[in-house]
Length: 384
Image (tube, rainbow, N blue to C red):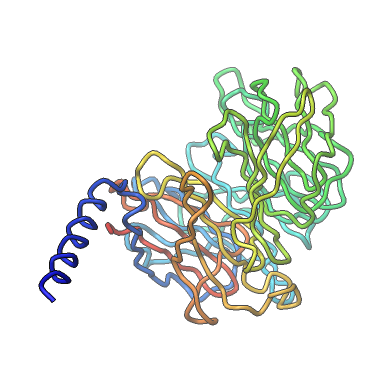
C-alpha cells in the first residue's frame, strides 16, 4: 500500500510537471458568457460604431443595439419578410457616401438586389439604396480584390456571374456612393472565398467548382478557372490560409446545406496544384459561415463556426438537429474542437448566415456576436 501511494504521488508530480511544459493554449479552454440581445430571427449581424460615441454597437435586421450594454435598441427600417426569412443576408460596415458615418452593405435572395443602408446620424429611418441587380444573393463578403487598400463588395449569387463591386473614390479617397462592377467569371455556385492560391501575391477567388486565378490587371484582363476540386454546397466564406505552415495556402470549407466541415491541404505536383481533403467535423450539418480569428490571444488563428439553424426551414439533411457554435484549434496535426454552445432549440445557439467577431468592450478579448432564426446573442470572451 505504501509503495502504491508512492507511485500515485510520483504520477501526480509528473502530471503537474508535464502541464507546466504543455503550451497554455492546449491546456485551457476559453470561457464564454452568453447574453441574449433580442429574440429576433434575422440571420445577419454586424458590429461597428453607429453613432460615433467610440463604443461598438450591434446591427442586425431592423434594429441597432447601442453599446456598451446593448440594452437600448434603435429602429433602422423594415426588412422584407418572406416565409421564415428576413431578406437581409449580410451586414458589412462601410462608409459608402464619405460623410464620416458608417453605413452597411446588404442584399437578399428574394429581392435579387445588392443594396446599402445609409446611416442618418440620428434616429430617423435608414434609407435603403440599390447598388445593382445581381440575381439571388446567398450572402455577401468584402475583400480587397484589386490590392489598393480598400475592400470590394463580393456577393455570392449561385447560378449567376461572379462580379465584384468597387466603391468609387475621389482623388482624396473620399467615397462617392457609386460602384463599378467587374465580372470575374460567367457562372458560379454555392460558396465563395478569396486568397492567394498560387503564391503570386494576388488574391484568387474560390468558388465551389474550383479556384479562379487573378490576372496581373484584375479589373481588365480575364480571370482563369482551375477546376481542381468540387466543394458542392460550400460555406461562405471558404477560408484561405496556410493551415499546416508548409508555405502553401490551404482551404477550410463547410457544407452549408448538408453534413461536414473539412480542410483541403494544398500540394504541388510539378506545376499542378492539388488539394487533399481532411475531416474537421463530419458529424454536424449546415456549416454555412465561419470566421478565422485569434480568440485566445496567442498569435494563432482559431476557426469559429457552427450550424445555421433551419437554413432551408428544416428541409436540409440535419436541418432540425440541435444548433451549435464551436471553435476549432489547430494542434499541429489536426483541428481540436471546443464547444461554445450546443443543445436543442432554446438552449444551444447556431451561427445564422453572417456573424461578427469583435472586441466589443475593447479589453483585448474578441467576442462572438451571432444572429439567426434562433435569436440574437453575444458570447462574451472571458478569461479561462
